[in-house]
Length: 380
Image 1 (cartoon, rainbow, N blue to C red):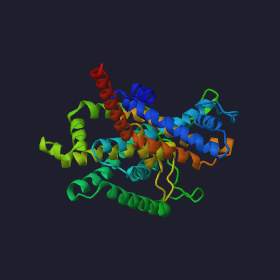
Image 2: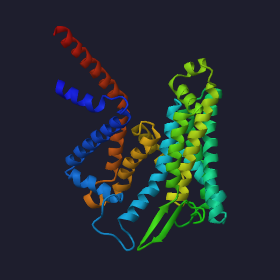
Image 3: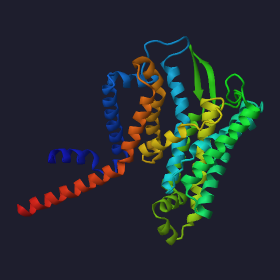
Image 4: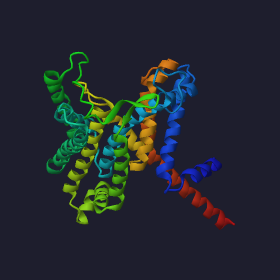
């Protein structure tokens, strides 16, 4: 038992590395749990997990259709990864400020819908349309997020309650307008946006391949480092973290807590808005009525798994997206229901949520080991 404890302390005991080592440990534990579930179902877990990689473009499939290949699958993977990164950043920024933005889906839908009807149907050329789509996403998402922050600051309305209610309002309001004005009678979704306004270059010929090229992935990586700098290197970032740690303490040292709550939700909403436009005018080209994007809720798992660290979110987004994107191929090849991928994602969320408990146990073990060393020294 002592040997095992020393082993874990050696690997996970360094507090500086725990932001990386504990999430990796959580992923490994969840994959083991997922493998056990697959084995109980009578499936080969190694084959199933490898099929997840194949479906995500990270491993070669057995066969491809014309003009398709591993590189086209990976481009599609990056296309779906882009809004995931933005959505997880939205959750992470709110968590840094001590808030829980469960309204990312609603903010995505609001920004995606406004950008669709204002720019997606406008006929503007690509050089004007694409930047305007991004600007609208930031503004609309920021306004919706800011409203939630204002309700929290002014009327002390819990942000979770406000987010859920606004989710419903946005969901049914956009559904009404889509069904009455913008419905495509064939697909029963909103009319597809113009290719000039879309943030993904669809069916682009590159050599012998036709692929979907996500323009937003570059912006997503840039925004990750901007948020990292904002949180770690600026006065605003310090104030956000101070408010998140202790509002009474932050107020005592002169930080305007109320305005910072609004600011946090504006930033979080703006990031959710970017997730919305890269989702509805990038990954997809239309909006399904009465449906909130599940990505907004998956982003919570991604942010928790990434320890609310912008750099960690890149890697956690990658892991969660492998499971969600590869599930269809896994299902077709191994005869495993796609819902199993959601189960694995849920297990990852469960283990990642236990990160604080793992840190606590490591700290207790470290203290106990120090006490044992002192006893041995005193007895010797």
